[in-house]
Length: 601
Image 1: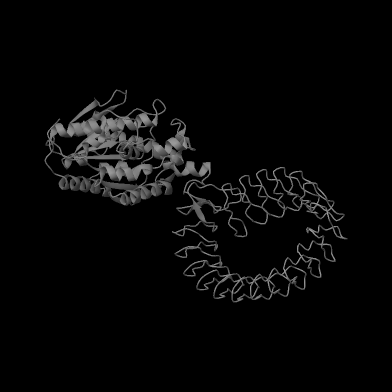
Image 2: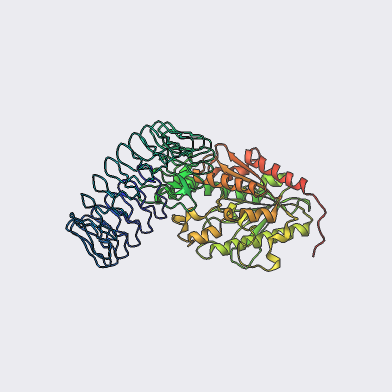
């Protein structure tokens, strides 16, 4: 919308300096703010729309409205095929070129005119004292000479036509346009069957006459309004903090009060409402999709987890994290039986480590996928959660995968899918009946995307994860990423080479409904740290909500005091709240789904 609160309602958000909507595909406008309404955006020096395919105009800026662009010396449109005009420049608009003594076009078959030379446009030549055409069969007129346009000649005190069968009018002379002549204290037409009006005289346009505290029409069946008096235009009366109408079923709004109402977050350079369904906003009040209106620096900050730790500086936290998880993983290898570098696919890094093969064969299995934005980290420093799980008879598979830019994101997803299949085959061989997929950061994305139907290429049966619905019992994500589109314009995408389209195709959030149809009643635990960035929290919470809507048993958990790195480091501690919740989740999945396995194919 504009700075006057009118709705722009355009795909490109163009507007004029008065805030009227330009209503054009090319956004052309004049210096008065009238919409040009042309495909070529032609306009005159007064800002009237030229409304022509060739954009012809006169020296006053009136539209010529002709195919040949003819005009007079006053700039009125000639509107004739022969371009005839008078000395005042009024269009003659006649096949015979008849005109009056002021040169106004008579526009009649008999050349009738008034004392100002305006065309009477009537069969009987009726006119008013200003020379405006009465345009009536009985020649009725008002005291300003405007045509009354009524069968009974009713008029108001300003001479505007009342346009009613009973001649009702207001104190400003605007037509009331009602069967009972109702009007407001500013003279605007109430346009209601019961004449309801507001304290500013704007039409309420409601069956019950509801109004707001500024007198703008509420236009609702229940008369809801905002704190500025703009119409809410909603079934639930939602409004924003500037009083602009939200015009949405959920009342979403931004901090400038622009209506959200768009699916793609488009905006103009003046901040007109982008019209989105989720009401997210930026610092200018343009509607966003949470991330769409963030500039490059804001996106980089939101998706740089190291900048949000309260413990160390951005660089220090990374160095500390690598050192800590390296030591914890080494300790796991020293204390837990393991088999390393087991290949599950053809890629050079398509290998995994198996921890706890000496556990009972029916033990539940966790498949752990590390993070690193699909371009860093390795399994060798990602075994920090092994010891507490081992103590609770849970076998852990720590998965590695090839990294960007050596391989594409699609290839990485398919590798993880193959790792999941390998893990399920191991479970069947051992006699286990519970596999839970878990991943941190980028790993959270990968374990969910690997389950998405149709997320990648057509796969041979031996790599189809849906064949293992009887074994895969749950998913745990730790500070995961579920919508890749915000990353496209950040440093993260440099080796990934994602477009917005490919990013969305590879986003779990895009296919949650399909996930629900294919995997319900799968259990999902979505976790995030208290000191993760707002965007990481938003993504996790939104993904969890969509999973619930899709019929999955999803739970959202924000871990107190944890940041993006400590939340994984502390999984090495049995008394850590997330470690305890993970173990509880695994045991619940194992207990609820203990069933006789089908015989091995």
